[in-house]
Amino acid sequence: MRQILTLTIGLIFLTQISFGQTQMNIEQKPYIEVTGHAEKKIIPDEIYLSITIKERESGRDKITVEQQEKDLRQALTDLNISLELLTVADAQADYIRVKWTKKDVISQSEYELKLSTAQQVADVFEKLDEIKIDNAYISRVSHSKIKEYRKEVEIEAIKNAKSKADYLLAAIGQETGTALIVNERNSNSDDYYIDGVQIRGARASSGIMYEVPSQDKFKGTIDFKKIKLETTIYVKFEIK
Image (cartoon, rainbow, N blue to C red; front, side, top):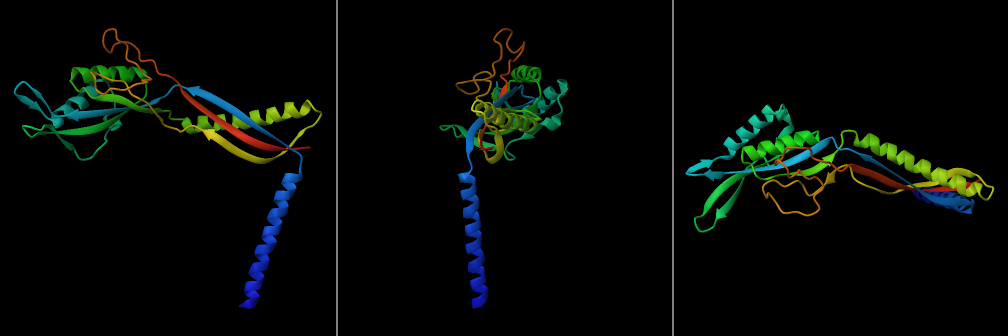
């Protein structure tokens, strides 16, 4: 048992010495530290709408959530939008008190609709207005190839770091050697959350990225800002 313990301590000691020597060797080598930055702008092709349906009254009639959901599904069918793109955000309807004095309670249900073009968004908002569903906004946007584009940006960033090291060292007659340390400093996420488009005063917000043209209500084009992918990579290169 004592021999095993002695052997274990010895191995740990040798490992620490080896690691320390490696670190010392890296630090002793002449090096240059640079950062490379790259960015790419892409038009989103995944647009997520958040839609809330509540019971409402029309004269003496009460329009149920179920009826409005049926109208919504028919509207999407009319627009040739697959119903598979509409999902229920909360599986169970929430019950909210709307008139404290009369203690009336209405139900509501939330949905998420995934669209792919600005024109689809404009068409859906127009249909929602027609069927009097007045609580909807764009909750987030992304792109179906976001991970591929991100890789391209990261590769471009590290290439830019290498290029910077090359021309800086060339200015003093030296060359870039092996990369000793590579570290991604910052990078944005794959989903982009925004203050969404309002319809009929659905919610108050600031910094709206996507606007519905005021002329002819929802007819026209929605201008989408491009998603900006960017990253910065720090690299420590050995100097030959």
